[in-house]
Length: 482
Image (cartoon, rainbow, N blue to C red; front, side, top):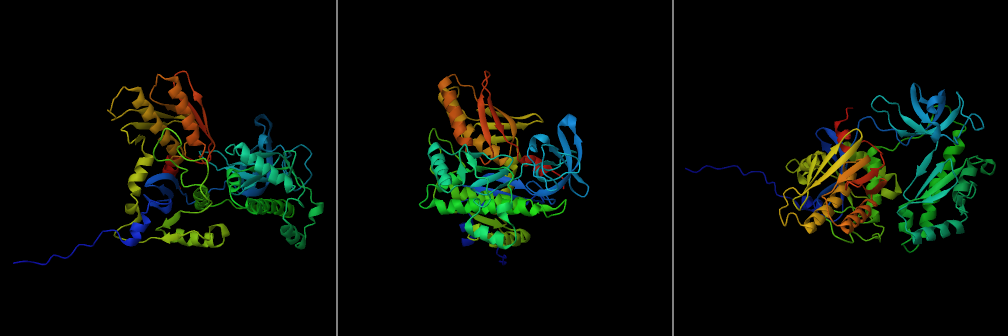
């Protein structure tokens, strides 16, 4: 006697799911991993960036009118209150030319002074938040900061692009003799100047504090386009108008006012993702080659990524944020919901995150990296591991080291490692091979969004790396308590 068996629910991929897994273009995924909200960037099936979001948002980047509570001469610092009961640490090295709103600066900072400060580090491990009086604002192409009039250029720009940008800025009377013009009437577009003066500010009588500028990598990449001048000037005037409005109206705001909120963590990640996708499709390597990992010439300035989330709250925030910002209005934001094939399974998020948080990373050759972080530094050891092909051959060691260098460049960003990093590559007898390896590693890290410096090889054959600290490492974010 036969009996009917109920058909099992199909778990085959739908057309939508197959399209989502399309390897062309990167995916920015906002989801939950082990009850922690996070953002992940996946390219070519590799996890290349990840960040966990705390319920209490970071204040890094927020600008306040603070009051000096006390001076600590032996530390060459002072304590500044930015809100009722919230006191921060301010080093005098970051306050050489502060913007005071209650009096004219005479070279001294006194108790009771009210000044503009910007949060540069959140409170952690019993330490207070840190602030700086060197206020800075930035966008994709430029950064403006108080305290200097000098104009600097990203170290990633070549001489040709620097020359083109210098000529363009000089022709538009924004830069003279390597310094930014200190006249707010010239730093504003005509339309912005007319708009602000119609609101009341007598800008011709407003004296700017020293304002300097850094020209970022994206500005140089825009020079490759057919009509970069108008777009670049638009980026500059938009940023300068924001800074001038902030400085002008700060004089009429009360103490402890927040003049600019810190960007939300997911907004920062979205900004960086869109900028990377617009720059090039080959910013992050996944397989090593002996030369020409990627072309120095960027891809056309077009966006080829997709934002996906299975969190309704994230979806609503993202759609509202992108709708209010012209730069993001063309982004495809997808709300994904499928009980039979959840997002974590579709992209193997559990496995990818376990690998990103593990101490050992396996290479395709069979070699591996062992990554150990201490209070003082991070050590990365390169091993031959399971690689048995011609083991002991210099050529094999060289190829494993090249693959390891490629993976290390990716892991630095993915794990957000910072400070002093020591890499113990497999020893090679050829000094020429060591030199090529070092040059290759320098090429790999120059596309990192965080400043990374390959220092040198020590007499013991250890490669020294330093990477600027901008946030907690991925492991610290994951283990952090709310």
